[in-house]
Image (cartoon, rainbow, N blue to C red; front, side, top):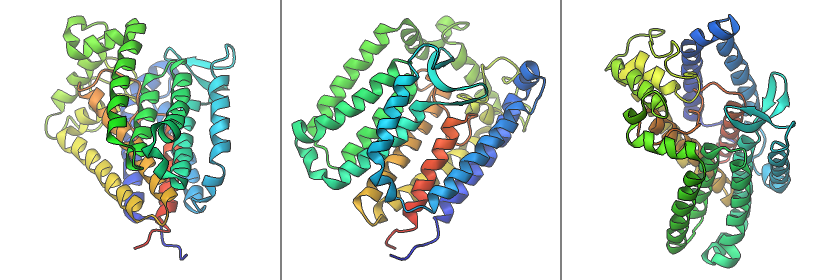
Length: 364
């Protein structure tokens, strides 16, 4: 099979998003970097390092035949389960932001849940490509995969990290639906999911506070509703054209850690409706090219792998922007390619590399 050049439009979208992300990480984090580390470039330099590492991984995975990962899908999945168990051991897992989600030493650390998201997509794509017809049977087809997804979700929730777990589960549901899962199964799964979500919220008071603050953030403006209100205070003054690059007011210790989950709020404040719309347009173009790759992939594994990667990215984008604009309760979800981060950025670029590898073999 003749190899093609990687999808140029997809590469262009990712590079443009990375450039926007690097600029916004610097602008959003300069005040925090100066205050905490006496270096306004602290976060920007680390983001450039992560982006460079991620682009290197992306280039490598782009030029590796994506079908190789099918052979190693089970091994990668087992390694990720081991890492998720290790991170829960006291003294081994690192606690950040109230969640024991990290493994590492000193400045170097990884977030195993991010690896699990991609590993589970690869494994499900491999299984579904081999026998998608089994999904019509709940007991022999759907149930074993649901138990596997549930086990991964359970380990992530023990950290706890509801945001990452939700993205993973929703992505897996998209894959099962595209692979031919029956509507009635998804109906009952939806009912079960709503019940489990209610139980998770009831089990942790802070989640209930986040839900009530989402419905009426001004009822506790200095507590659970603080982040949403400060985010809206950033977006509102941005107007059509924005206040100008570097001119955000909310980044000066009003919006907590603006370089991560709420970076879109700072972007909207500084570049306005036009800047925010252009970023959303880039994500839309990414989705278009990703769906095209999935439709033209030469085999089922390529199709399901592309669907899973595009689904994971877009679900994360929708949740992040939904939280920032007050449409969803606050959860710790980063904005792909823009938010400051190591594991999340590197793994997302690695996933893009897999997508680009598939694009080299499309039948068009």
